Image (cartoon, rainbow, N blue to C red; front, side):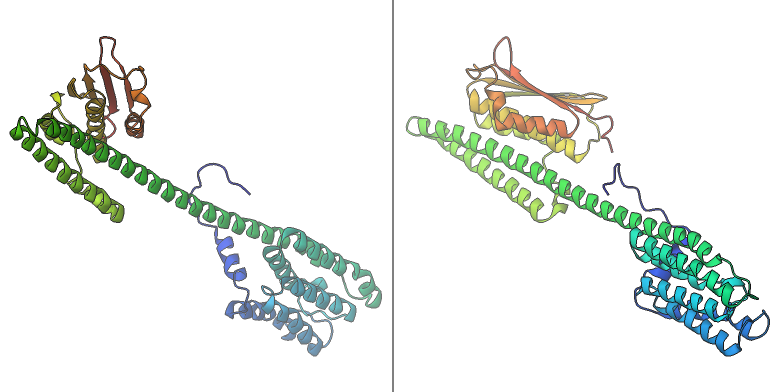
Length: 405
């Protein structure tokens, strides 16, 4: 059975379901089974033997039938069908022998209903219904013969009638138990799926970070190494500065990469202060300027107490957009503007470079895809397109109203 809708926590079963569960969950006889059998004998057969209730037949016969009717209840959970058949046979034998081992007509008592309840609870619906109908009809069918053999004794079909509510109660308990088991299974399955999705999202986040880090660092190293190669003979001082910038960028990239790998080994590293945030953007701009990119930085509005996901995503979006400028238009001038609004954080990166030959060529790269995924993860939007006046523009709008701590 496939369940629809989010699974709720399993409600606490009513008292009769908890009690019946204690009576039916264990297949091996224990103290409860012996108490049930002994209780039935003490409550319904002992009064007959003590003379408190009317007795039909000898005391020995009444005691024998009482013991025989109670004994199968000890193993009712292990062999439910055999139990209900055995109790029905004992009741029919008592009818034919003219012995009354309970105070009621046709030996009415808990023996047969308890056996029927157990078979309905322990067996599938078809098997339990078949066993109940067959035994109930058998106890009813033997009545005419009992009346014929013992005309002075009253007989009725109380055993067959008592089997109906007993079977219904047992079937309800069985159905409720199966429902709870399936609900718990579905809850565990969804918990495993949720954990799997969380792990996949974490792997995706780390893959974005690795892509942004490696792409940015290698782009800066490529640009500065090209500058060093061109100036090595004519301007050795500038070449040394370029090589120094390459060393700094390489060390910084290695530090960030080690930090990301620590996050993979230890998820608690996600909360470490080494994670870049929006406040680190001026340092990023400074490093890009040292690499030769002419970039301007502007911050407007009052920064809020953003969550770590928004801080990191905002930083990575700006980093990736500026890295794309260095890749596709290394001689261009770039502008980074961060606007802190009451309801959204806007990050804008523009440049005046020639741009790619095709208007959408740059947006087809993995960098733009990663930036869009970061924005979508925060329920934001990102646009990346060529500007009519020339150059390229990346604009990310990230909602902040519901993400403040």
